[in-house]
Amino acid sequence: MILTSAQSTQNNPPDGTGLHIGVFDSGLGGLSVLRAIHHHLPSAHLMYVADSAHAPYGERDEAFIIRRSAIIGDFLVSQGAQILVVACNTATAAAVATLRQHLAALPVVGVEPGVKPAVALSRNHRIGVLATPRTLDSNKFQHLVQNHSNNAELVLQACPGLAKEIERGALDSPHLRALIKQFCEPLRQAQVDTVVLGCTHYPFVIPLIQQEMGDSVHLVDTAEAVARHTARIAAKLECENKASPTPSIQLWTSGQASHLSAVAQNWLQWPLHAESLPLDVA
Ligand code: DGL
Image (tube, rainbow, N blue to C red; front, side, top):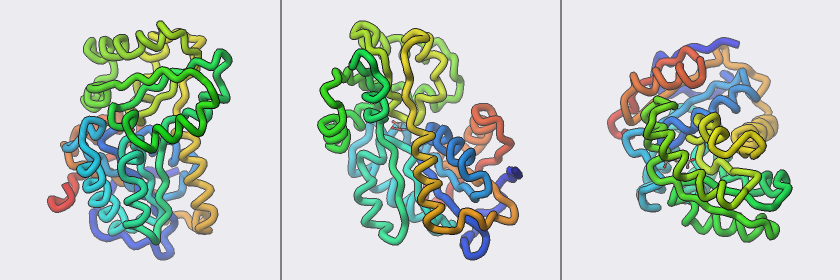
């Protein structure tokens, strides 16, 4: 498998050059989903946008998230994306329905907190959900709970500030540890045996959450499921076997490109070079 850094932000039409998948998040968290997609579709050309200048989305209003999602979706389509993955629970809850209308010709894959797998895993039927305030407040999440909690007791814990602290890139700061301790405490009190990681930033702090919750508690991350779903769509598009001549991963950000490059290399161990988004997209 070859990883090359992006050399160009020119329009990158997909014809004959393999599958192009656009992925975005409010910031760096969606890299957890990008990693899983790359694992399942190593020959696909992956294009990732981190909207770090506008993160965290979890404390923004819905109209703002819809607007940013449409701008970034359009940008990724202009770069040749044939599938769009919204690698953000918050943006999915706020904007996926609008995006699907807006980009009607394109499959749009969303992510949602893994309540369904958690219900299947839990033995004591007590499940904690860690997510952004915006995700937990959304109608989409309320429907998910109504339709799939199956009488399990759900302890919903909003985590304001947690994604923002993870965005800083240091995964072991005292402030990060303090936030995780604070947000895990009600879940420990409720003796949950399963915790849903309802934000794509949180998989990067699994060791700290596991330490707080104890080794016997299951942590549920949906990145793998989203990647498998994306691979099924790719198979239907029948282009997953036409590998790009140089399968590569391109990263753009509305924040600092050097920060995204450093974090992607550090967290994913991939030698990637990020670029700034064009001004009209950032
Ligand atoms: N990574 C995001 C999510 O999955 C959002 C974090 C944020 O920007 O608040 O919800």
